[in-house]
Amino acid sequence: MREPVSPKSSGDLDPILRACAGALLGALPLLYTMEMWWYARVISEPVLLAMMAIAGVVAVLSILFGGFRRGRVTHLGIDTLVVFGIGIGIATVTLLVVGRIQPGQVPLSAAARMIALEAVPCAIGAALAMTQFRPRDGNTQNVDRRIDRLSQDRQKVLATLVGAVFFAFNVAPTDEPWLMAMEAERAHFPLIVLFSLLVSYVIVFEADFAERPRGYTTGVLGNPYAETTVSYMLSLGVSYAFLVGFGHVTPETPIYAQICGTVMLGYVTTIGGSAGRILVAG
Amino acid sequence: MSPAAAKTERPSHLSRNVAIASAAVIAVLVGYLTIEAFRGGSPALLTYEIAASEGWTQDSFAYVPVDVVNAGGNTAADIEVETAFEVPDGDPIVKRTRIDFLAGGERRRFYAIGPPGAQLTVRVIGFQEP
Image 1 (cartoon, each protein chain N blue to C red):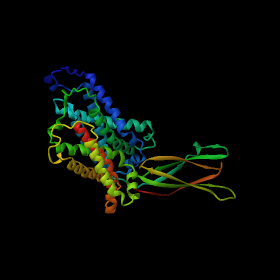
Image 2 (tube, rainbow over the protein chains, first blue to last red):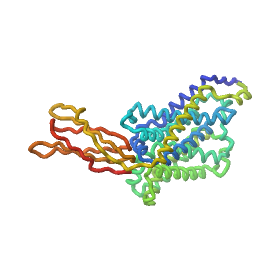
Image 3 (cartoon, each protein chain N blue to C red):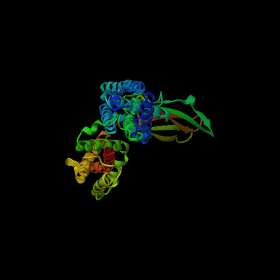
Image 4 (cartoon, rainbow over the protein chains, first blue to last red):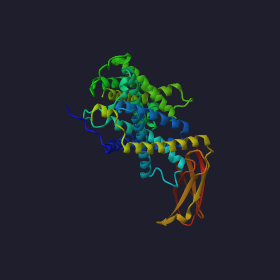
């Protein structure tokens, strides 16, 4: 049996660099999105802090799913801090380099809000890259996937939420999903619902992305149709929360428009949720 | 590494240092945003400055920099600014410029282009406060 390679101190540089790359790969489109700069200026601080808290939860879940260094739960805390710090760092450097933050023109408060908002997808991208895209050499001896202790149902729910949030962040800030929802014909929305369910089912159960772990078919969500349906409902919930968070939906928005927007963005979050569940299996 | 050794693996100095630096950065950012949240905002207040000394003339056109500043606290959106060059014996040359948004304290520069030597007047037509 092959002896696992002993990690050296400098070996931690690789996951840190991988997290930096993940932050850029995951969030670069949003760093170049005008709506993000705009929302950063108008969004209230409590909402912004709530988004950062959600990103923290998503980062923790990503690390729990992907695995952190075995033995001590402090490793989880350290990795969470690292991915968040990298998210803030990458967002700051990129916004400075591309000129969206210019000392003397953009005040500190606007710069801080832009960095905080852009750091959220950067941190999620960093967390996913650090854990999910590590070299798969079969050496899991020093990896602690503590989330495996949860039931399959709970893992699926959490994975759906992680994936849906990550995908929602890449689309929800833009005006396009709302515009699409407003311009689509009424007949489109039932089709979107059906197609979202179909795509989710095919991605998770037919596309054969990953071997499903033992016990995957246990629990309430053990049935593929139940899993697909419940995950879709969760994805719609994430969609609605993002539409509210980014100001597309307000209490004055008509109910039908709220539903249309949620279903339109729900197509994206459903695919994200499916991707999250594939990671559980992987 | 044996399983027993793996169980007691400690984070490297690099990981610890990056985590400590990250914690400091997060604390500063969250602390600053929290303070800002309690401060409350004042209404947007748009002013302008004509930086005529930084302008230039080229091909019989004068390029005059105009800095629009949001001196208030809240963000202003869809800001519409009108520039007018007074032309002797003729109608003034009027143009409108739209600025998408300006946060409190933010400054944006645009250039008014008109005949050299003509008197430039600027006025803010209106804006939204989202």
